[in-house]
Structures are given as structure tokens and as C-alpha cells.
Image 1 (cartoon, one colour):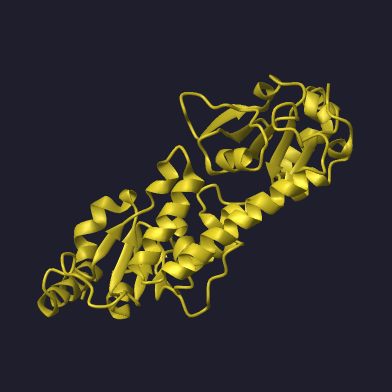
Image 2 (cartoon, rainbow, N blue to C red; image 1 turned 30 degrees about the vertical axis):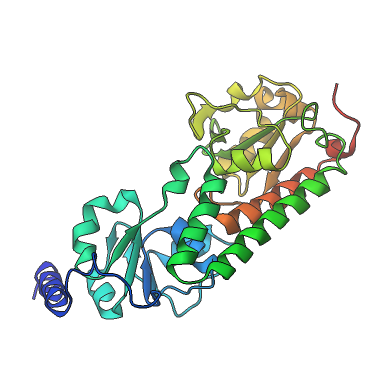
Length: 306
């Protein structure tokens, strides 16, 4: 039997064994959940709920290092082409998707009740949105106490990171301290810079820092050439590791790069990689990692820049 025919037969069987699963109410909190989005998977795991299946678990483990995934979680394959046979075999009582999965919604509803979340990433305040969606999921799973504790723990981590910044003269004053370019290099000429409406941008403000890149037209991030980063000569450049090999070579040899204000003054540092589409666990990890990176700079402990 061809794969498509097999899926149709399985879905048909699921329809015969349930009555409009997407519309029915849960008699008890869902326990066998499938998550087809990494950001939502992080929020679910933050509540102590272990999904029976997730999209692309190897990729999640590589990118979401602050959020361990138990070995028992079944890898369902690609985020937008999941293995339907496996999903049926797992007998989920809930499937979590994002608006990007809308074209799959009808098919997924035939397998199990399907809930669409993940809008926090499109919010101008993604961290605040992630806290709100964590509590939404907590109510869905009957884990309000765990949700409140997870959100509170993230807020404490951010507050602790902000307190550490008070010991760094270059960044202690949110009004007069050195602003931050938060970036990820693409190649030796181009990088992604995160604006105020990104997860990183909101957290920079939460930490009492200033974002040197205000963003264009409210965009969360922009792809630019590195020569666009010279607007504020006091700024510090922070990039996520690892650097592409060609970028590292460019930094060693390019006179243009070495003349950039942050490179010339030694106000440049790398930090542990954090997924920009992450949730509350990634937010806490970002706050700690950013302050660790800034604290390692000699310039951070110097007098406030003129």
C-alpha cells in the first residue's frame, strides 16, 4: 500500500473511532501530546509535560540547548511534513501547532484535537507573549502551579542577570551606558541584527541595557552588511557563537572590520547561541549568557564611555 493511501486509511479509521475530535471537550487534562513546533515544545517541556512526539528532535536538541528532551520522545520528522503513521500510532489526545501549520489543520484534526498557539513570536514583545502562552498551556494541562513557577524562575534569572550588570560600569546606567548590537553572523560580509521587537531585543530592555539597533519598520531582525554597524561609536557588538570560519578569517585580516569602532576599542564579544524563536527557558539562558559575555570584556569594567 502506498504511503498516501495508508495515511488516508488510517485517518479514516480515526474518524470512525471518534466524533469530531477537534470540537470535543477534554474530560481530563491532555496527557499524550504531540508538538510540531520547537518554540511550543520548549513551553510544554518547561511545564514538566513530556510530549509523546515532537518534530525533528535532533534539530531541537542542537538548537535548544537550554531545554533537554527525554529520550522517550518520538521523533516525528520534519516540522511541516511529519510522519502521519507515527502520529496515529502514538494515539495523541492533543496536537499543538502554530499558524504556519494552518494548511495541515484539517488533517491533524482527524487524528486528535488540535490547538494553535505560538503567536508570541510575532508579538512586538515576544518574551512577554511567551510568558502568557506558558500560562495558557499550564491551564490547558492543569498545571497552573508549574506554569507560575516556571515563569517566576525565568523572571528571577533575568533579575539576577540585571543585578550583575550593576557591577559593570560600562553597562550599569541604562541611560548613559554603552548600547548593544545583538547579532548573528551569516558570512564574512553579512549578519543578522536583532531589533527591539525580537526576543533578544525585549530582553535587552528587561536587563536595563540599550539596543543600538532600533530596527526598521518595527522588524524584529534585519539582514545587513557589517559596515552598517558604525552609527554609534560607543556600542558593543555581541555575536552568537560559533562564528563561520570565513567570518573569523575576515576579522583577522580586514582593515575595514578592524577600523570599526567596537573592534578597534575591544568592545566585541561572542556568547553562547540561543534560539531567537525560543520561549521562557531560552529567555533565562539568554540573560545569563549575555551578561557572562559582557562581563568577560575588559572594557565592561572600565569607566563609563565618554
